Amino acid sequence: MKPQAAQVPATQTILMVDDTPANLGMLAQVLEAHGYGVVVAQDGTEAIERAGFVQPDLILLDVMMPGLDGFATCRRLKHLERTRDIPIIFMTALGDGGDKLTGFEAGGVDYVTKPFQVDELLARVNTHLTLRAAQQQLERQNAQMQQEIALRQQAETRLRHAHDELERHSHKLERSNTELEQLAYVASHDLQEPLRMISSYLQLLEKRYKDQLGADAREFIDFAVDGAHRMQDLINDLLSYSRIGTRSKPFQPVDCNRLAATVLATLRLSIEEARASLVVDPLPTVSGDPSQLAQLLQNLLANALKFRGEAPPSIRLYAETDGDAWRFTISDNGIGIESDYFVRIFAMFQRLHSRTAYPGTGVGLAICKKIVERHGGRIWVDSTPGAGSSFHFTLPSLQGVAA
Ligand code: ADP
Image: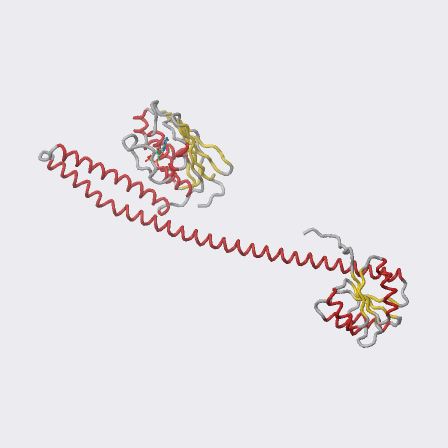
């Protein structure tokens, strides 16, 4: 809030209280001539009534009055909520120090002595009006400040509540995610055994009764075995996916050069079969779970080999610094991806091709995303259909990474 200079309102009203009408008339003229509004009262009771009603900016109060004298009137005015803040200047003919003291004790702010020195009277009136205006302004500013503080406190309380609510929701979400992961894990784990039974008995059936079965029946058995294998692949992928959260190891320094070498060794046959050229630039050491990071690289490199175009695959793996993190890129010259699918392909079971064109379950990139996010990074793709894709992911650099 900006501090403002105290302003004296354009017209200020002064209540004059005197039992001598001649005094009132003379004084009223002087004050009105100087731009003040004047209200008069001729005794204490009338003064209290008018003051409450008119709310003057200042009261000039005669001390010696019949009935309620000036001091008693002042005390009552100071007692009343509506009038207690109005400055009161006593008018007295006595130069008595004792009386002045009584006046100050009653709540008066000043004295003027009759007969009046007009200049002195005006100077005192002006001083107290300015003081009162300044005081009122301070009170207004103070009230405004209190209001702002109250508003801020309200906003803070609302924010705290919203934050608590958000935290509750996120805990709930975390719990149901964990439950879901456990369910997926248990379900896929328990599905493995009956599935193995189905495919092995189907194979047994085929082996034992091959000669007695017709061509149709053999074909049906092949379809069934194929289905069982696919289901096995799906279950394995689902298990890998649900293991990322539940079976993770604490982070440790991981030399990505060694990691890439291991992954390339695993993919050696596919690389040879595709006659792919693979360039791996020098890579950094990062903090992470080595087996998950190996799985990440393997999924991305396997996709780069799988989604190849006519030309033999040309794949490059490199890393660059990106703020506090490392940005890894695996670029290929494969079939590419339409930009509409750049986000969707990282969700579970999202595939852009038929199984006959490119085999797969559509879980690989979902696994990659989960691994990267668990490591505090993000993953995305850039691609030009027909020209190739670049998969990027970030991993925090080694310094300052909590396991
Ligand atoms: P999958 O490989 O089992 O189909 P992913 O989750 O690994 O499943 O990939 C999802 C989809 O994203 C793929 O089916 C494919 O359409 C697309 N995709 C992934 N990697 C590439 C790539 N390097 N080039 C072109 N398309 C890709």
